[in-house]
Length: 366
Ligand SMILES: *[C@@H]1O[C@H](CO)[C@@H](O)[C@H](O)[C@H]1NC(C)=O
Ligand SMILES: *[C@@H]1O[C@H](CO)[C@@H](O)[C@H](O)[C@H]1NC(C)=O
Image (cartoon, rainbow, N blue to C red):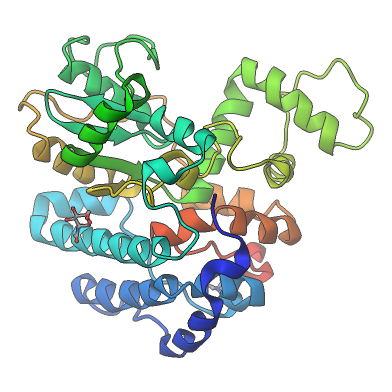
């Protein structure tokens, strides 16, 4: 179970806040050097457990967050022009994640192995880890973080799919091997000897993506979750039996999340922490959705995938969550709900090095 607020080591944190200095603007200094100090400064805050304290005190409103990792366009540009820059940035992100995970997972109440998890936590985790015995790797899949494409890659690697671009509807169970399919000894062996990786994404962008996809497009979700959410949170609908559930607002969705137990949530909005347990499993690589192309290429090379297997291109129907869309939706949610929501996903922000979103009234006025 994730620790309660008071167990984050807030005492230690207050001392380290002194080290904070405003980051160098990425636009005024050459990117190479700019990204290093600001991102590391942020890491110091996160690693010391100060992030939660800062939320509680509302301090983040007055602090500048470092520039986020490059968006897809920039990565593409640099991939062609300077592989070195990509490598440096990726390396920094990996190091920050390693450091924050080490320091936060070192706290007393954090799990240190798969076997110290509760049965429910372990079940969730093992059911989210896909196994490839030929290339000796384990992949913890996170819905809304390119997991369908990774599943395609796994099927191609195991020979059950001809190539990653085959136009078939993704079957999320067939032809895939889950770690939960194995007895404990076999699980232990694979955890010890295989290359373990996962991919993460900015937590609010992931939530928004789940919201837009499930409540905007999938009727089964509208009926199952949408109708329930409207009954619970929309005035005058508590007893309504005929709700389509296809017009849930983002605020209603957020209120629903606030009332849900992270350990029992639907996997599309369950925190990544609960799905992949980065304290219980020492991942060798934690890739970013924000730099999917290069991080995926790195993994494929690392596990020795044959040349012809490459990560699929984005689907043409894919609707990206842009900065503007995220700004728009987050700003429709009343502050008091966001203030409760962020702590619920705080481990996803802090362990993976994502700055908290700016949700101040000034910001939302634009
Ligand atoms: C991060 O930690 C993992 C697991 O211990 C290790 O395999 C990896 O090399 C580390 N990466 C960096 C950049 O330090
Ligand atoms: C949030 O945005 C506002 C308006 O753009 C800005 O003045 C403020 O400094 C920002 N705060 C953070 C923490 O980035």
